[in-house]
View 1: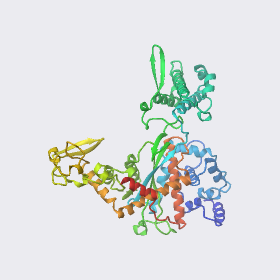
View 2: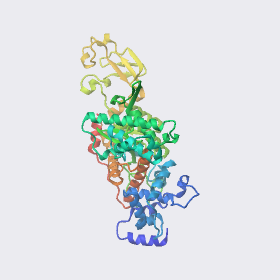
View 3: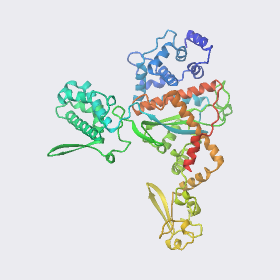
Length: 565
C-alpha cells in the first residue's frame, strides 16, 4: 500500500461513512492473490493488470451494480478503490475492455467460482462460516440477455444472424450463393424493428418462406464447392439445429415441400433453442410465469445464535458484536427447465466440496421428496427441514373415511391390517411412475360385505388397494407429514423465509434477475461475483455493528406450508 494513498484516502474517508472497498482491504487484506489465478494467465506476453486486483474490482463493480465503463472510471478517480487496490494516486487505471477479457479468461479456464472459494476460505479461517449449523436455499428466475421471440420471429432472426455471420466471414462466397438484393430487403432489419402481418395466413406464409430460405442456405453451405470451414461456423450450426427443431422437409419427384412442425412435434424444452444468440437460454415456467433464460439457486447460513465464537477456538474478526451475518455459501446456475428437486443433491455436493455442509438445511417443498430426505441424510448427514406433500388419496382429500394412515402396516410380516382387523392377502413390489413401490391388496370377498366399505374404497367390485413406498422412505414421509402439522415445527421452519430477503437484496443491489452476459457459464460467473459482493456488503454492515434482524414469518412461507398441506 503506497503511504501517500493510505494517508489521503483515510483523511477523505474520515468525513463520512467508511467506504466498503477500504473496509474490505482493512479487514481481509489481499483477499484475491495473483497466484490463485496463475492458471489463466501466462508468464509470457505483454504486461497486464493483476488478476487479483481485477477480481476485486469486479466484485466491487457488482456491489455498486456498475457497467464495465463505470467500474473503470471508479478505479481511475475513486480514492477508495485506489486504497483497496494499493495503487498510487496518479495511477491511470485500465481500459474497460480489460474487465471483459478477465471474465472470459476465468470462464475459459473453469475458474467461475474461484472468488467465492477464496472468500469463504478466508471467512472459515475467521470462524464466520463452517460446516454444521443451519443453512437455507431457494431459487429464482433469471432473464437471459436476449429478447423473447415467438416462433416466427425466432426463425427470421436466426436466419438473419446466420447471414450476418456469413457476410463477415465469406462475403464473396455469399454474394454468389444467395440472391443478396432480395434477401437483404427481407433479412436486413432485425425482427423487432417491424411488425409481423396481422393475418394468420400471411404469418404462416412468411414462416414457410423463412423455412425454404433456410434450407436453401444450408444446402449452399454444405455444397461440395463451398469452403468446408463455413459449415463449422457457430451461426451455421445454430441455423441447422433451429431448422431441425422447427421445420421438416419432404423431398419427392415433384420437388421439396417445407412444413412447420406442429406443437406436439417440437423437441422438449431442455433441448429447444430459444435464441440464436444465447444457445444456453431455455423457456422456463415457475408459479404460472414464463420466462426465457436461467434459474439461480442461492444457499446461505442462517444460524439463530452465535455458535461461532471464541469458545470454538477460532478467531472472530474483532470489532463486531452479536451473531455472525448471514453469508452466502453456494451459488448454482442452471437453465430454466431444471426443477428445484433436481438440484437438491448437486447443491449438497457443492457444499460438501467446500466443507460447508449444514446439519439442518431449510428448503421449500419444491426441493423435497421422501427419497431426497432419506438420501441426503444417508449420503451427507444433512437433515432436510422442509414440508412434504400431504396424502393425496380420495379419503385424505375429502377428510372422511379411512386413508392409508388408518391401516397398520406389518413391514416384517409383509401384511397390512385394516381398521376392522382384516388382513391383506397380497403384497407385491412394483414400479409406479418410475419409482419403486409396494402394492397391498385386500381380498374382494373380505371387503365386499364390509359395513364401512363406502368409507374405505370407491371400487364397486374389488377390495381395497394401498400403494406404499419402500419402508425407510415411507416411514420418513409419514413422520414428516405428522411433524409439519405441529406449531413448534412451523415456527422452526419460519427460518427458511429469510432467503426471500436475500433474493430481494440480490435483485435490488446487483440486478441478479437479469443476466448481463450470454451463455450459462458467463451468467454463472456473474452470479458468483454478485454473491461475493453481497457477502462483503453484509460483512461491512456487521463490522460496523449493524447485525441483521431475526427472520420473521413471511406470507410466502405461510403459503408454502398451506400448499404442502
